[in-house]
Length: 226
Ligand code: CA
Figure (cartoon, rainbow, N blue to C red):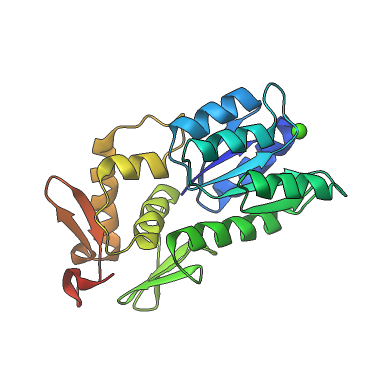
């Protein structure tokens, strides 16, 4: 999952980025409204954390532009304390949730998980694909109840495929959702990661759909898993 943080407080944005990366998200940061609007307009984020008071373009205007232009990713806005009118304006502009500053990063993480799983149509942070269990809260995976040792990139790949289980996902989509902007994106590396993941979780759980991409499925269910 790839998250955009738009926040002009450099210390706060860096701190948030670290806590998100620690639990397996790919993160891009924009420190002003113009860059924030541009990134949200051009990159397919799984969720956005948007401060409202920003240089160049304010958060409410950015959100309105995104929504007018059909950007559907979930957005959580960061508001000042006791500013109920900001929250109302934020929801009216298309926000999905809000957090009042100051907040604990644990709360932001919980709200982001809720937004991402809701957007994907799941009810919990844990996803089962046959005997493969993916826990997005703990950033861990299990096969037949046994924990699997995964690198953060391998977990990101598995987590994205699990959230979209049963669907064919192209290499491009995987690259866009598991790497941040600064990563050297080469879709060949996806094949390498898929290969490693297969060796760890079982070869037949990831189907290669020639010319289209990959599908995570329950090998005992065939491709009817949805
Ligand atoms: Ca601010």
